[in-house]
Length: 365
Image (cartoon, rainbow, N blue to C red; front, side, top):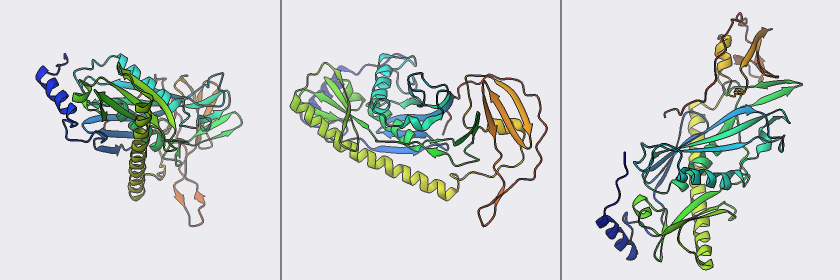
C-alpha cells in the first residue's frame, strides 16, 4: 500500500500550532506520551506502547562458537523489523530507517557493554551463549527509536538465560522447567531520548504528525548514572553547543523517569509470577526422550543432532563435538530440602529422524 502523504492544510495547521508553542496532542514541549509496558508468558518478551506506537521485543539465545578475538565472551545481536502492517510507509523489506534503528541500538546497548557477555561463556574458545534481540514494530505513530530502545532494555532486563554445568568435556544445559533460569548481568540502563526541532521549538518524543513537519532531530542515549552513551543527529538541522547541552540535560532527566517505570514494571511482573508460581521449576513427570530433548531451552543450531543415548536413566544428545546431558529434575522435595529420585524407569530409545532446526517465529501474546 502506498503511503498517504499529509495534506497541505494539515501541514500548515501543525506548523502554525508548533510556532505558537503548542502541540497537536496538547502536550508540553518536554512531555513524553504515556508509556505502557507489558510482558509475555516467557522470559524476555516485552511489549512497549509509547502513545500509539507499539513495539514488541523478544530475546532468544543459541549455543555457538565464540569469536576468535573474544574466546570467553558471548555475543549480542539486534534485528529490527518494521512491519508493513504498522504503517503504509513501511514495505516490510529492510530499509534505511530500520538500519539506522539497528545501528543505534547496537551503539547504545552493545558497544556500551550493557550486558556482561563473559557470563555467557560455557567453555572458553568452544561454546558460548549468543543473545539475539528481535524488535518488531506493530503500530506506528512516531518515535520508533525511543520505543525500540525501551522495549530492548526491558526485554534484556526481563530475560533469564538457562543454567548449565560443565563436567570435563560434557556440558549439561537445563530447561527453565528443571532449574530456575538466571537473569542477565545488566551493568547499566541506557535509554534514548529523541528530540525534534521545528524552527526554534523543541519537541520531546515527536509523534508521526510532528515528524512530518520538523526540520530534524537528535537522539541522545544516557544512562541512570547521567553518562552520555551515544548521540545521533538526523535531518539537516544545525545545533549549537548550548542547545546540545540543553538536550543532554533533558535526556538525562527523561532517562531517570523511564528507568524508574521499567524497574516498577519488572517488579510488578515478578510479583505476579511469584504469586502464580510460574517462576518456579515444575516437577518433571514421565515423558518420552523426544519430549525431553524438545524442552531444552537452548539448542545448538549449528550442527544436526547426531546420536541419542539413554543410560542409567539420564538421556544425552550429541551436537557436533559437544555432548549435552538432559538431567531429569526429580518429582518431590522433603522437608530437609533433599530431592527424592523419581522411580519412573527410562523409556526405550527410539530412532528419531534428523530434522532441520529453523528459527522460531514471533509468538503472539
